[in-house]
Image 1 (cartoon, rainbow, N blue to C red):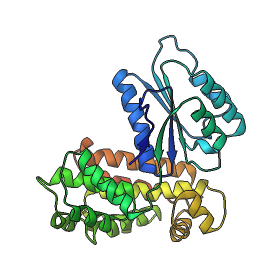
Image 2: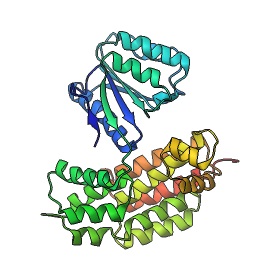
Image 3: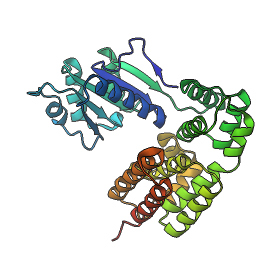
Image 4: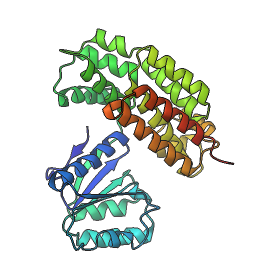
Length: 328
């Protein structure tokens, strides 16, 4: 789980979310946004990439409003900000605006460390989101997810879930959510085995792999087989999201050896090679379209739509089309 500083006020003027575990980073951001909207339902949220935060942009976003509206400004990948923009952020840290919460999402490490140091120096609230590389950490994460949901799961069930799903925290969190929603009473090893052992990871990632490769017909066939054999829809949306995010991460990374990129992006070297093959045909606009499709599908399978199967099929078609966007 993410670790927080002692002064844990989500509405602190500045929050640092530091680490490379995407799920924990996203949750750190969501916690701030939820707290802000609880205080003011009309809170304006701006979620920015380094390319969008140009010199002068932060000053414009944080300038006083006639209506004194609450605002949350999220800066993703803060370690990649330009030198001029870092100067703007440092200046803002010295005199943060009222009713505005700044969230800096930073990978940690040496790159962009001066900005981390500056934020820590002014007492920014910090949420540590380290990559969970050890099986014991992932097991503790699963146990924590069940506890947070107010449910009981046996140690054997937690271990079986980790063994079946693997290392992706989003997949693990989605699996826990599905089990909590579907199963009454204590969740045991037999239940987890029926849902996931040897089935969910392979089939959901097959759908995602075919979709990001632009092979719509094969992706739809794999999707229908997965649903017919009982794979939870949330597992499939999670796999689709992971596949598209991997394309986006690698396409925006600088060239280098797979081992170097693996360290930078938090992927195993074999996956770097696979994603390199899959990303042919993708454009930045295509990635953005695909991510929106995944978000819509995720909402659809979690109660936001009448037909989860249709929501997934639509997302698969959009993703496969986006995979062929280059050269059109």
